[in-house]
Image 1: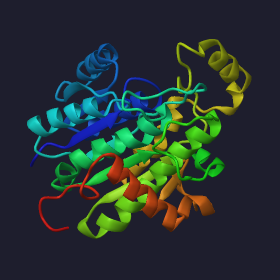
Image 2 (image 1 turned 90 degrees about the vertical axis):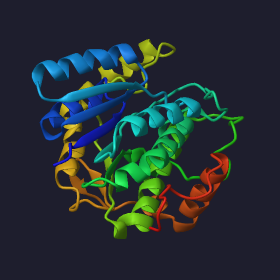
Image 3 (image 1 turned 90 degrees about the horizontal axis):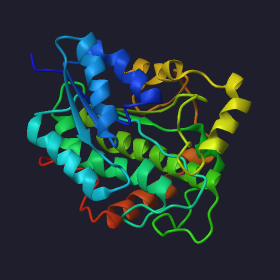
Amino acid sequence: MSNRILAITGPTSGIGKSTVIELANDYDIIILLCRNIEKGEHLKTLLTEEHKNIQVEVIKCDLSDLANVMKAATQVLDHYPHIDCLINNAGVVSITRQKTIDGYELMFGTNYLGHFLLTHMLFESIMRSRDKQIIIVSSGAYKYAHIGHHNFNYPLRFNPIKSYSRSKLATLYFMQELYEQFHHCGLNVTAIHPGAVSTNLGKTKYNQKFGDFIYKIFDSMFVSPKEGAMSTIKVTKDKTLFNGAYVYEGKVTELENQGMNYYDRKRLIRETLEALQLDQFMYLSTDK
């Protein structure tokens, strides 16, 4: 029997770290796609000391840099015959207007575009596997934005709540498009909202004091990263039950209207393909 292989972005802290630790018994190989290699190596040591038979690889993957995303995906493809489960877990929040190396607004470029390109490059490898599973960590923040018409232009005006919400709405549309086009080929894809989780999300070197202040005020409302990871873990273990669904705190939840706008979704996917200079939505060398 072939090895079960998990690949996950953002695995070194918060929900991602808790997810990896909880799933380590279920996979033979874990690929840590992380921006901070030092933290990735520390997590690798932790996992291999606890699980003697597991193989862990650390690959640098900065989702805000599309060239680096391509390099990371190529490394995965060069060394592994398939990916059973890809968890698009990483996320960034910024309260200031920032630009990716490719010229996109940071949250849209990282949370959505980087993951889109990574999934595109790994897609055939995922479809070659037994499980054929993709999990997208989204957010209930999608409710506070519409997708709009200028996502691929660096914004002249910036609202951090709307920008973050828009990036997460885009990830929901991404999940829906994956399900619509490939569920009949055996793909299992789910978007999850883990709830209000106490992590380092949103706390950067530019707003550390502000971030600490906000988390202190609302600490009683947050669940722990381990509790927040349970949605991802639950979906991973029962992929067919949650296929094509939006899952909130472990339960299938109906999306509000802007989360299901067919025409906005199709336009977003079309514009994404144009921006990334891709000929088709997800790559398969054979007919779907």
